[in-house]
Image 1 (cartoon, rainbow, N blue to C red):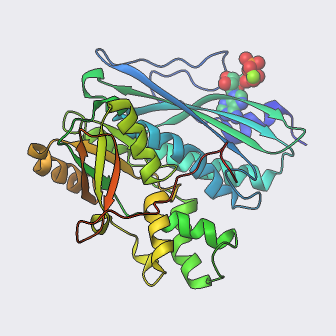
Image 2 (tube, helix red, strand yellow):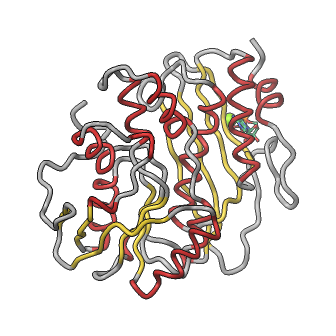
Length: 321
Ligand code: ADP
Ligand code: MG
C-alpha cells in the first residue's frame, strides 16, 4: 500500500498554473481578478448513495468534478481551481489511476486545476468531496433570488436520459440494454455548462443547475425569488434516447429526473435573441419552456393549455427512499 504522500505525489500532483501555488504547501494560493468575487461550492459523493461502487473509476473522477463545475456554471463563474477530499477504504493503483485521469482531464478542459486536498483511509465506504473556486463579477452572478415575474424560463441541453439510465441500472425499469447504452453517458459523464453560464452573465436573471429534478430545482429559484412558474410540458427538450418510453416514465424523467447537470435559468423576454446567441456561441442548445409568474406555485400545462396533475417530486436525500 503506497503511503499517503506517495499517493498524493503520484496521482494528485500536477504542475500548478502560472501565478498559483498548488499541491504541496499548507494552503494553496491563487489570485482573484480585480472587481471579482470568489464563487465557491462543495459536493460530497458517497459510495452507494451517489454512485454505484463498481462504476468505472475514470467516469467517477470526471463526475466528482463535473457536478461542482456545474455549480460554477449555474453562478456564471469562471473556474479557478479545486480541492479534492478522499476517504479511501483501499488504495488500488488501477482505481486511483483511472479516477485521477478522469478528474484531471475534465479539470484541464475547464482550466480548473487541482490545487490541494486531503487524503485519508476510510474504515467504511469511499467518500469523495470536491470544492471548486471560481471568479465572478457580483453584478453578473446568476443568483437564485433574481427571477422576475414575466421572465422566460429556459433549460439547456436535453432532459431525462440520466434518470432513465439510473432507473434501468436500479431495476426500476425493465432491462433494455440498447436504451441503457444510449442513456448511460448522460448519467456517468455529464458535461457541465460552464461556458454557457458565463455567457449568460448580464443577460439572464436567475439560474440553477439541474441536480434533483426540474420541478424541485426550479422550486428553489421560485422560493428565493418569491415567485411562481408556468411550464409548457410540450416545450421540454427530451433526450432522443427516451423515444418510445411510456408517458408516465417520460413525465417523471422530464419533470422529476435528477443528475441532469443542465442549467435552468430565467431571462426577460427582451433577451431572447441574446440567450439564443449565448447558447449558439457556447455549443449549448437552449429551449424556452415557460415563464415566471407573480402567483406562487408551479403549474405544468399540456399542449392544450390544461394543467397536468400527478406531478413527480424531485430527489431528496432525507426524503422517503
Ligand atoms: P496537511 O497536513 O496540511 O493537511 P497534507 O499532508 O494532508 O497537509 O497534504 C499535503 C499536501 O497535499 C497539501 O498541499 C494538500 O493540499 C495536498 N493534498 C492532499 N490530498 C490531496 C488530494 N487528494 N488531492 C490534491 N491535493 C491533495
Ligand atoms: Mg491534510
